[in-house]
Image 1 (cartoon, rainbow, N blue to C red):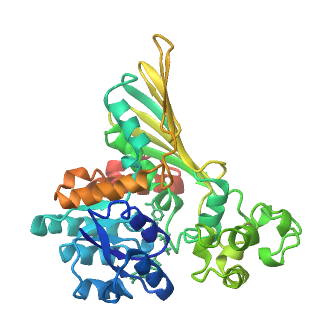
Image 2: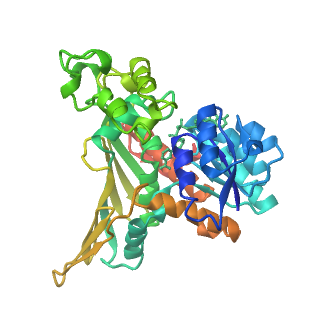
Image 3: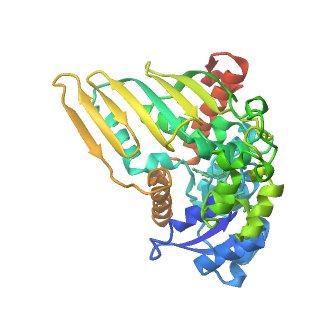
Length: 414
Ligand SMILES: NC(=O)c1ccc[n+]([C@@H]2O[C@H](COP(=O)([O-])OP(=O)(O)OC[C@H]3O[C@@H](n4cnc5c(N)ncnc54)[C@H](O)[C@@H]3O)[C@@H](O)[C@H]2O)c1
């Protein structure tokens, strides 16, 4: 299968790494990426010849390249146009989340996907990897098979990780709503999507609270300056950009994203002039660092979701309460306790690897299989499913901003 990548930034490069273990099934034949160093680094890694290297998605999609599927991994605001153009040309599509930063654009992508399915038999999916990871799939099986009876309520926590939050949401691409979108959409649309999948019923109502509490100017240490590079307390600061982006392995995420040239000088220059060198209390960030969402599903199941920056681990954690027992989920392990006999069963997944507990590999592998078999049903995160759970995410943010309990159906109608 011939795959074309649009946007060879951090995420696009990462997703395509998961194609390398299945070379007999799929390979990347073309890339569109305006940054020359990125384009060439990616193309060299995947053995893409010069005629498969393009500066923009428009060049790629209007060129002579023949591909079976397109992966769109440009930034959040730049998904709609290449996604619709790819669908109109009959390409199977794997689209990064969020589908788009507003519901009108999301609905437009949905209409294009419907038309493409009808006209070309197109397979399309959105990258919500959690549904595909081994431990997340096991949790879904346990719920479906009523292992703890009827599910009554659950709590789910997205532990963003203190340094990951500072990197991506204080200094990085998703720090400002006007440049990307709100935190619940850019970070947690996966979690809302997974909760909806787990419960398997439509969400009726949502409420939400949250804000930006810590990464604000008034919390900066008295002696701190605007940039780490000139700051007298940098050596002992846990957020030191010098340590994170210059002294660290500069070829690896997260240091790798601050510059395309990974020399010490280029990284020093990046933190002296760019957003990644800013003091974490004096950046121009405005997205929340903690948020809770309450969800009520049809049939009465309730759920809470918490996104927090303030965690050591970067992983999901959940507690599910059923009529006959309860489940603790840690992403790499599950504990099931039966009320009747007080027995605890433990499932240990061992090392699942990176990428959302191994989920990233599995979504890529599944997409390849779905395209090969032209079987949309293999993609549980198709465009309609994703539109539905994006809508819940937008409704929850509306609830946070207005302080109301929001009826999701009425919100979607509006
Ligand atoms: N599903 C997940 O778990 C997950 C994880 C991380 C990121 N993402 C999403 O992936 C997307 C990309 O994130 P990222 O961290 O890679 O950002 P990035 O900025 O590193 O990459 C985006 C790339 O798109 C390129 N680009 C810009 N205009 C283009 C054009 N006209 N044609 C082709 N390429 C173009 C940019 O030069 C850049 O290299 C975002 O939407 C993000 O939200 C999803």
